[in-house]
Amino acid sequence: MAFRRPAAIIFAAGLVVISAGTAGLLLTRHATPAMRPVAVGLEALPAPTGPIVAPPQSAAPRPVAAPVSLTIPLIGVSTKLITLGLASDGSLQVPPITDTAVAGWYTGSPRPGAIGSAIIVGHVDTVHGPAVFDRLSELRKGDEVYVRRADGTLVKFLVTMVQTYLKDQFPTQTVYGPTPDAELRLITCGGAFDRATGHYVSNIVVYATEAS
Amino acid sequence: MRFPRITRTIRRITMLLAAAALLLGVPAAAAAHASSATTGTGWIRLAHLSPNTPAVDVYLYSFGNSNAQIVLHHVAYGTVSPYEAVSAGDYSVAMRAAGASASSQPVLSTSVTIDADHAYTVAGMGPESGLRLQVMDDDLTTPPGKALVRVIQASLKQQTVKVTCGGKTIVPKASFASVSSYQAIPAGTWTMAAIGSGGTATRSVTLAAGTVHTLVVLDGSNGLEMISLEDAAGAGKPPLGGAATGFGGTAAHGPGSPLPWAALIGVGALLALTGGLRLRRRGLGRQLRAEV
Image (cartoon, rainbow over all chains, first blue to last red; front, side):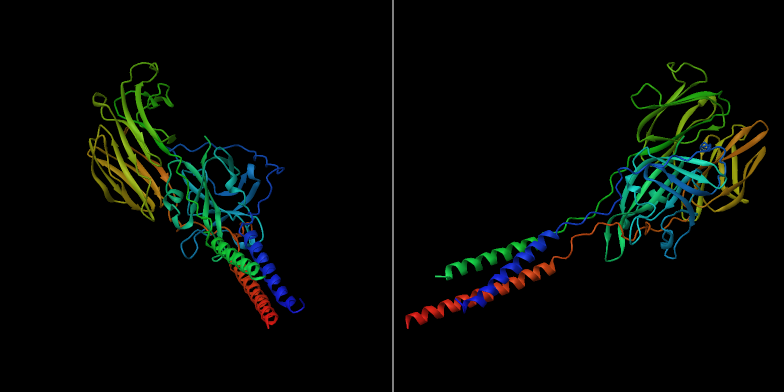
C-alpha cells in the first residue's frame, strides 16, 4: 500500500490536470462580449435649435458654409467637426488618436447640405474604451442627425440606412460617389477586431439624406 | 485485480483526449459579416423644355397606383425640378395643362423604370406640335479629378448651337431637342458659351472635381439663354478604401487559443499514464512475489 501510493498520486494528479485542462478549454471557447455602454437610462440629447435651412434648388445652387459641429441626439453625440484630408496612402484621414472624442469632415467631399455626399468620420473606440462614434451602429432609418455650419445655420438629416462593409470590399463608389441630393455619410469601424493587425475588419456607414 | 480498472481508466483517458481533439477541431465561428442588400432608392426630376408649350402640371405615379406620388403645379418652359428620392421600381409620368383636373386625360404620359442608385430626368421636349416626354438616365460617376458636363439644347429659335468651354468646343452641333453625351472637363471655373447662328449665350461655371452638370440652352426673352444645373456631387478625390477608425478598446475578445489547454490535457494524460503503468507494474510484481 505504501509503495503504491506515489504512483497512485501521480495517476490521480494526471486525472486532475486533465480535468483542469478540459475545463479551461471548454470555458474559454466563448468570446467575451464587446464592451458597450448600457443604453438604458442614457438620456438622448435634445435636438439643437435654430433655423433649419431648406435644401437648395438644383436650378440655383446656393453655396453653403463649412460644417463646424455634429449632433446625433439619439446616441448622445455632440461634437465639433475638425477638417480631414487624405492620408499619404490615399485613404481617408481620421481624427488623431489624441482626440478621439471629435469627428471630422473630409474637405474633399461636398459640404453638408450642399448637393452631394458629405463625408464625416469618427472613431468607434480608443485602445481603452469608447470614442465619439461608439454607438453609431445603433442608428436606424428615420433617426435625426444635425450639422451646424460656420454661418450658424443648421441642417437636418434623416438616416436612410446603416450598412456594414468588410474593409477589403468597401464600396467606394457608393459611399464617396456623386449623389443628386444633399446627403451625409457617417463612417466608423465595426465588425470583428483583428488583434493581429490592430484594426477592425469592417466599416459601418450610416447614410442620411437632408430632411425636406 | 487492478488491471481492469486501470485499463478502463486508460481507455477513459483516451476517450477524453479524443473528445478534446474533437473540440479543437471545431472551427471558430465565422466572424465575417457580409453587408445586407441595398434598400433600393433612385432619383427622378421633372422638367419642361418645350419652348412653345404653355405651362403644365406634371404628375408622377408609382406603377398601378392612381394616386400621384408627386405633383408639380404650373411648370413653365425652362423649369427643372430638384431631384426627388423615390423607391426603385416602375413609374409613369403624366403631363396635363396647368390647372387641369387630376382625373382628366393627360396630354402626354410615359413610363419610366427607376433603378436603385440611378438618377433620371424626365423632360417634356420638342415643339408643342411634336411634344414628347424624354427619359434621360443621368450619370452619377465621374472620372477622378474631373467634372462631367452635358448639354440639353431646348432653343427652338436657334435650331443648332455649338457649345464651348474655355473657348474649346465640347459639343460641335447640338440640334433642337437633343441631349449630348457627357464630356469630362478638368475641374476649374470656365466660361461656357452656346453659339447659335443668330446669337450667343455665355456663362461662367465653376466645375468642382467629382460633380456632374447639365447645361440647358433655352430661348430667352432676349435671345439665347443658358442655365447650369449641378446634377450631382461627390468627393472630387475619393479616398481609397474605408477608414481606420478604431483601436479595439471596446471590441469583443475572441476565444483564446486552445493550445495551452490542449497541452495541459496532454501533460495530465502523460502523468496519468505514468502513474497508471507504475501501479500496474507494482501489481504485477506483487503477484509474482506471491507466486514465488
